[in-house]
Image (tube, rainbow, N blue to C red; front, side, top):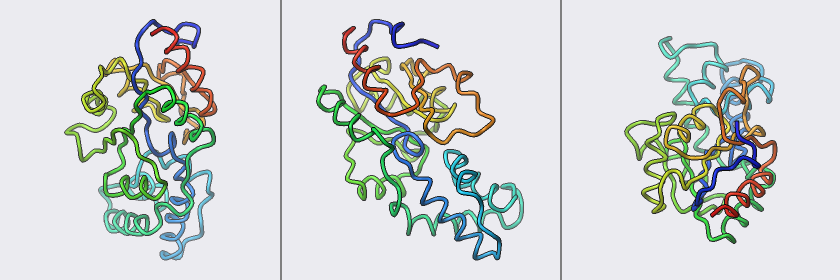
Length: 230
């Protein structure tokens, strides 16, 4: 894995983020929703940290976590739909940008770089969430917009098209192995967000990200070094 001192000379024109666990801390709303659903099923609440570490894996993983069911089990799909219905009503109550993200976005915009989002979160949830938090990225790519969701690199190829640059001119930031694989396969430099929703069994170094950060503001120095090489 490269360090900032080993950055290759290249022109960077944009920074694209994964959403849940990278740009936004959405876990508090998922904690509420999953435990609300468990309460309706007469089950005790789960520990918030346990839920938090599963958020990046999506609604299906949360149903499996909350109720011990596989997708093929009877009762799985009704629970998933109820979970999503609850989430629709509670998707921006406690969600907020991670510490340092506001400053990072300001820096990106001050440098006249574009920024965007490439997420596996469906558009029906992504759009109202961004609106509620008054975030206006230059592009937003959801599974609805591609034939192949992450880890396939299609999302980053579409981002490059929408942002009028080459994939290798985009830094892609994510908190999951599939994010880094998506960016790497598209030819993007990548940043692993170690502050995100990382499962205990995850080995971040095995993702082969170009960089790794423990706080969002650490990305400013990384971007500056890329810009210095432009």
